[in-house]
Amino acid sequence: MGALEGYEGYEGYEGYEGYEGYEGYAGGGRSSGTAGALVAHRDGIVGSWVPSGATPATAWVSGELKQGDADLLKRWDPRIRRFVLESELLSSLYFAADAPSLATPHRSTLFTFKTDGSALDGSNAPKGAWSTFVTMTRPPEATLLKQLDLVNGYADLRADRAREILAQKSPQFSFWGSVVPLYPDRHARTIEVLQLVLRLAKYAEMNFKHALCVRRAHEYSPQIQPMIQTPIHGSLPSGHSTEAHAVARVLCKLVETAGATLAKTFQLRQLMMRQAARIAINRTIAGVHYPVDSMAGQMLGLAIGEYFIRRATAGATATVKVASCEFHGDAYPGVEDFTGAEIYDVQTDALKTTSYLTSVAAAVPVDKAPNLAWLWREARKEWA
Image 1: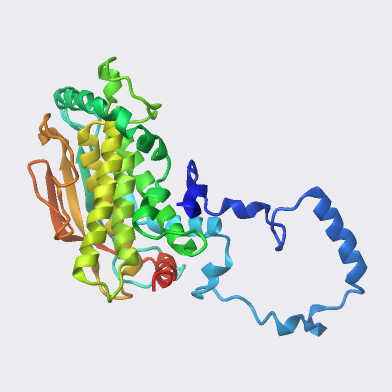
Image 2 (image 1 turned 90 degrees about the vertical axis):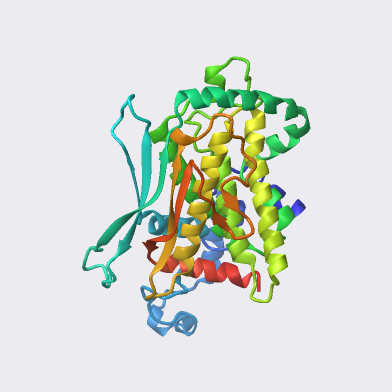
């Protein structure tokens, strides 16, 4: 995957940082020598100042830019677009946690906001209602102690999976690009979409990690001895599981074409979900996550992925809904492993109901995100 190697080890999701050193366009990175040369160069060619209204400039600059034009986003640096798009996504999400208590399991909820349909033009605040989107309850310590047996058992696979584990520490563009032909030069907008998905998943997972504050496996047993540096934040949900499943969900939807057969669509989804599960399991093999972390991450990742898709593709007036789901960590069996198939049916592309997961389809209304819709349309063109 030579075209994707530049992404290895890249953790900032900033987007196209390599262009910073390019000096061939206005605003590009310039050395002091180039700046001095440009000063002398201008002095040699610019001539006397002529008011802009009388210069040929009017032939190639026509009128003022208009707020709301669809092509405005195309003009900006990808990093600037990122701020606009992230704020659009996050403006309709809200996190809340139950009051701390040792007597009852910690619980945290992600809510999403739907406007009442009234026009938003900058002169009025949005009116609408919050809906419960994703809720998680922390597993009790007794469950985590039982999960240690599984973590210990997975350690036998470390020698076999070491190369994968190390390569997957950063966003796994090379792995996704091994299933879907993904090239930075050809799929710049698609990669921009995936970076946004990763950022959104990161915001969601970190809020849950903070609220649920689950200890890592090696904090309970000195025999776990993780093979990589353990991240300094809560264990549940697994960030790798959340992000990999969110990307799998979004990428499958993004690249599917109207002419694709059901068999081809299913094969792509099956392989992407298998890959997401393997990435998650590799974190347990490494000793930094319990299987229950991966299970919670899978649920969150699929929910975040669906939320992203719906907000990017919703019609202008139609009400679009996503599923609400709840992970009951207090009902999770301590001996339950994770393979990727326990709570997700790849055939129907839907969450299953189990003793520790409940899901209600099409329960949460969401609004269209106009700026995100533009990026989605641009990314779709790359797969036409």
